[in-house]
Amino acid sequence: MQSTRTLKDRIFLVIKGLAMGAANKVPGVSGGVVAFVAGFYEEFIYSLQRVNRTAFKLLFNGRFKSFYRYINGKFLGLLFLGMIVSYFSVSKILDYLIVNYELYVWSTFFGMILGSIYYISKDFNAWNIKTITALILGAIVGISISFLDPAMENDNLWFVFFCGIISVSGMTLPGFSGSFILILLGNYVLLLVDSVNALYDTIADLLTGNFEFIKNEARVRMLKVLGVFTLGSVTGLVTFSHILNYILKHYKNITLSTIAGFIIGSLGVVWPWKETIYKTHANGNFILDSTGKQIIANYKRYLPEFNNETYTAIAYIALGILIVLGLEWYGQHTRKLKT
Image 1: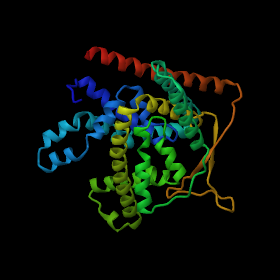
Image 2: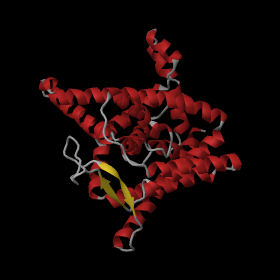
Image 3: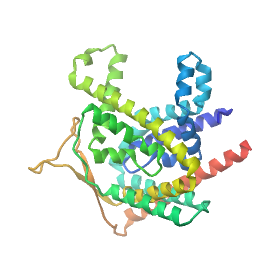
Image 4: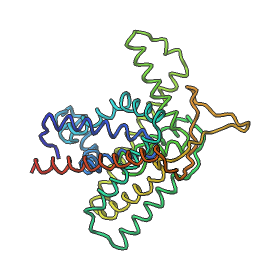
């Protein structure tokens, strides 16, 4: 699977990583959809499942070059570089856009999901009772998840490890939003906002030679939480990739139709016209996180009135569809050049 990549390919791979990282952080959006539509989903799963006993033997024996080639290191390295950069840059921009232009951001994502459904279904010719059933079940699961009530925040390290395993589902299962699952588990703000901010502040302190954070129990606790969450995420990523690689080999059509169902079900989560419902105490006051932000409980969806704002949102839905079609064209164009 390891191949010679041009500088252009490498740059685009980092950009794809940026897109996956940003998508993974947005509740209702799946980074796996980016991988699926951009045409590198199967290589992504294949490369991850190469992180196995053989890979660790090569690593522990000091055969680093063989280990790097065996796990398709150039591909994974560039992709994860993009994801890491995204968490400290693109996702911050995305957070700003959601706060200030929420309707248009959700409209764009809604369009991208619609485009993804078209992309998956257009060349799929294996429809039968089994695949249609898998499609329906996948859609039911996706829709059902969007209407569940979130739990309260829990920083128990074993639970945080479990959250890490679950959170990467969006990277390996297109249409299955790991960040939205974290909202349902009550730990979205803790794991994707507070702990990341703690790491960001710690890095800034280290660069200025300030080590006072060691005495800050809350900061140290957040760093521990982030470390355990990261460990759980890596564990989940490798585990899911092995399972999915086996399923794709033996039950590819059923898997693809189930993924299509997940993506259809996720339309309910990214529906642009919705009101954010925040968690409140018994006295009616909002429950705040450690940064003073209101904690999201769920969304109340509604049908829009037809006005200029709605027409603009529809235009952004069309833009989202065009983005996916553009990614599809790029993927096909790249494959033709390589052949």
